[in-house]
Structure formats: C-alpha cells, structure tokens
Length: 322
Picture (cartoon, rainbow, N blue to C red):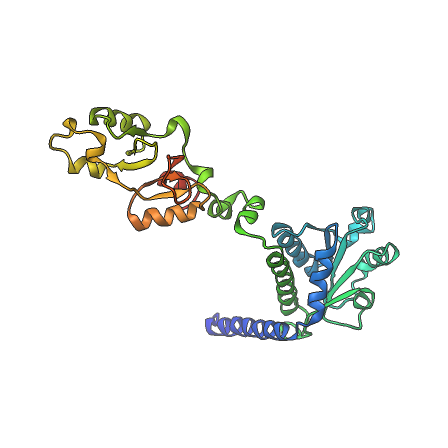
C-alpha cells in the first residue's frame, strides 16, 4: 500500500529546503553580482553560457531568458566546444560558465580558451576554491546547501539556486535596459504570451473594412452598411470627420418604432468607448468585458478623432485572448 501522507511530507520538505536555500542566496548577494551585471552591460558581443549535465540544462534556460529580455546570449555545450564550437566565441563576448562543484572536466578547454584570448569569464559555482572560480574574473557564488534528496546525489537545491541566480541576472539587466512589454513582444510573437502582448493595431480591421456612415445618413442605408460589413455595428462620423457615435443592435431595438424615418444621428449612442491603436489587445478585452460590449472603434490617442480601425472580440478570441 502506498502512503500518500509520506509522499506529501517528502514533497513539502523538498520545497521547504529549496525555499530556505533561496532565502540564503538572496541574503548572500553582494557586489560580485553587480560586477557581473556591469561586465555584461559593457560587453559588445554576446553572453555565451556553458555547463554540463544538469548545469547545462539550467544554462540553456538562462541563455534563453537572457536572449528574450534584451541581452544577446546563446548556449555552447562544453564538450562540443572542444570539437570546434570554441570558434563560436569571439572578442567582445563574455562567458558565463556553470558548475556546482566548479570542477567539471568538460569545461577545461573552454576555461583555457577564455584565458588565452582574454575573454571575460563569469563563474557560477558553490565553491570559491574550485578550478572554475579560480579562473573566473567575476564570481557568482551559490550557497552550498546540499541537495534535497538528503545524500547529495540528486541535483535539486543546487539547480534551483543556479536557476534563480540566472533569473536574477537576466531581470536585473532587463530593468537596467528599460526593457518594456513592447520590446518583449518582439521576441515572443507566438503562443499565449505573444497574444497577450499583441497590440490593438495588430488585430484591428481598417480601411474599407470599417463600417462608417455620416450623421445625416438615413437608417435604411445604415442598416445596409451594418449588414455588409458584418460587425453588427456602424460608426457615425461628424461634420469634422471625427467619430461622433456608434449604432449597435441595442440602439436599433430602442428605436424600432419608425426606425426607417430616422437618420443615424437620431439613433446613435454619442461619445462611444474607444481605444488607441498602440494599446495592448489584452487591455481592449478588459474594456469590452467591463462595458459588456463586443467591439471597440480605434481612434487617435485621447482625441476622439476619425476612426482608424475596429477591434471585435472575435479577433481577440481567435488569438487566444478573452
């Protein structure tokens, strides 16, 4: 018979041990972390991340996080480096080498290469007396807290600390570079994250697709425009070309009696809710949900000028928002 409580107890202990180690890491950060940030900020090339085994897996993630947040980086496998990939390193790069023990033999040729060609080396290890840290120009030390398995064999606490140090480094660099959501979107155009970072301008309908009429348009013609454009609404422009109002199905129902004897201005809802083209589409969805509406006209920022586009809730749902 399995013992669920025993499993839960073990899981909680692992997470507690790792959380305590993370607190120790945060408390132990010092000027060496700032030196690593400065070194990367001042490099003209890329950050080359390297490590073997579990450190290599973490290194892949660190390189990916750096690259996606404005710091050019890629991962070089240390064994492949010894068979030609050292040619991927060049003057102006900086190397981030990862090894919990600091004694991974696979890193030897990479370390020697950085020393031979004066390529700055950041070491990330738990042992300051290790070969890696003795060769490094800047040191990122993680606490030596053993592993969660209890006998120091299963990389767990050490990999969690290494990952956290990499995240801290990437986000510190990101904040210094003032890397914003719009910058982040450039590196994440696909998937759920890309959808969240889409701008209204990416999804809106524009040009001839816009359902627009003038204020004096007879409702018989307004109904045709609504039907032909297929959004269920029509925008009403004023004499100066600005968006004066909108006609929705609700406006039509409220004016059913004698509807065809009226013009657009008499039926429309004035001063409709709008959004700007550079707003995030996620923000537009929030507005539509709050207002319980299905579309928004897109206008110049805060001016209520002529309509630039129309965003429908279906456009947002299609890319995974909503």
